[in-house]
Length: 470
Image (tube, rainbow, N blue to C red):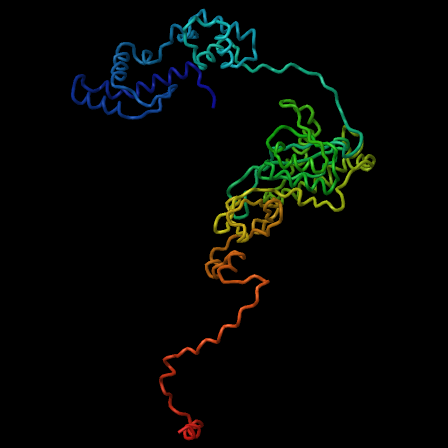
């Protein structure tokens, strides 16, 4: 939104004021109709140009009427303050001292500047310090509120010799695609999560996702490790995506040195930024409507472009293609140990307390665990790429404790009451294994039914038997 020029704003204010008093000017003064109309206008809410106020008082309306009768539309324009540009909350002497203090310490913020002024005795004894907004307006008028650029620090171009010595990772804002197949009208922005090898410019893996959070990035890292081995160093920025505890645990487990760049210094990530520039210039402009139909279609197009075009085109900094440089310098690659379960390392872990009815909740879904875990705190292990219907692994005190499945309350309503294994034995009178087995219970007496008391009609075959009984 552009700021309205001062002359245009004054004209707009004058027209607004005239619009409120136009019918009042034609109403007889000191009449009942005049008083009722003034009160009615004062009770309304307005969008006043150049002001946050929403109401106009009765006295203000009468003052505007008097001004218009005396000077016309020009008299309704707002008047300029005589002390414009000067602060009325602080004295000129204090204003000059604060400006000088800011000039001598340009990196001090407004709050810190006020505290420093109090510390060095610039404020008279017993005087209340000025408000931050007042000092900010004072410094803005003096042109001292612009952010100071950091001093230039010279650096050197660097590049590792062998593949896998260092990987860099970052995210980029991507296009908007359909959020889901069921909702074709709503569009959602996606993010490109990518990893690049420093020595060869090979991209171990890259993927578009609806989020740039850690849960979306870790599957990208896992695919890169499976395809291109283990790097010695992993270089990334200070975003929350790369500051997660799980990423730190993964890197420590796999003996990968996790390095975060200096805040506000993106120069060290120039290679991944150059890759993003190539994506914007070569891939995004050529996307078709079919590529934006879904996230899966967009990722398939990205994979084809990386493997069929980017890896096979000569790189301007290498003088050869990324795959040619990789083939020549991949002699020091590391790979996971044969017995290492890489997928388990990347499982997300969530601590939850099991309710008395053996239910835990995760991401808005309810799961059912073993009866023996009721009331305990367990750890749920979840694969971020697995569907929500897949059961979760459960650990209790560091030991496997079965699986958590989606709760089916209707199925539980149809089944009998379940008991904990230990308690069920006590309730049913179970005896220890060492005790002698109890004597078998006598057979129950047959139950007498009312139908047995009714004598049915004799069948022809049963007459002889009755005669013998008689």
